[in-house]
Length: 474
Image: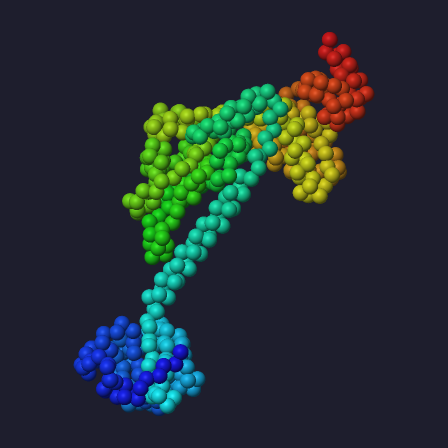
């Protein structure tokens, strides 16, 4: 609101009853102000400037005193004038300005009126907000960083989602799954051991989704995919730096309240093995270059294709870390030890891939028997590759043994030059496999109709084939 003052206060003296401030005292107060102060008369002629104004703007009072504001703006000494705007509007005006010093300021010009309503002074207050802007920028960067973390965490949360659908119709696999279900209830480290491609990643997700941490994060990190320095930063984060003033959280901190899967844990460098032992013992981590302790509440699931016990004996893996992770070991089964799961897995993959490629392809009975008899050294990963390759390359809707890019007993590969290991009675091999499947289907379903359907044949064909094959067996 515009201010009115008695005319006598415009001069050097005060009104009746006013405190008896000396001119020197007033000048001391004027110069002590942290904000810059710029005063003109009613004609916009500069009459007073304090030291703070000089410091903020870089302008010298000897160059400004006695100068009309119109001329200062015209000569571009001042980019815009709050004083002139206040005189024109006859009310306080606030502007934001950037001066040649690089400083940002908020200026407020307030007109002062005498008793007759004439503007006799314009007092401009100049507040340096450079530091405030810097803090604002840092705050915005911090918020952006936090938003990025929240976005990452939301993505990581979604990676758990529902429990992965694990196929476990083979009795041996069912026994492993029972151990996993029990492990999910216990908040202890778990070690998944087994050949490559046996599904350790899905098993870890399954355990996480069944645990009390199922609503928490699930983070995966492959220890063999980074150099030692990269892996240390990835897991433990880093101290504050000019680039990241709040520091960087590592994956172990990001997983707080949830589960982290350390894939190929046998590849952990010795230095990081020591740091992981400390985490298991104390529940805290330190960032790279930072001595501050950060508590974390996580469950560690480790997986490996190596024989960790042998690595311990060879002094390549720390014994205390091995026993810290090996509280509940789970041995993942290769496909050759869970053969009753092969066809259900093929069926699941076939449904998924038909939807993906917009096809209606299926495997013939003989092709399924061929898949059943193969050794699968690459396990689930190899099985999926073979199934998808056959479905893409097969010209018709029915995939036959010759369409499979593998070589198994009783079947030639699609690749030229592959040879059978020796003389094979192909008819006998096929009949043995067929009878095995016919009996297995009946044991699983307990009736002819469902057993026949599971093998892609009608009940009469199922009964006739079973009698025929069992007759030859006797």
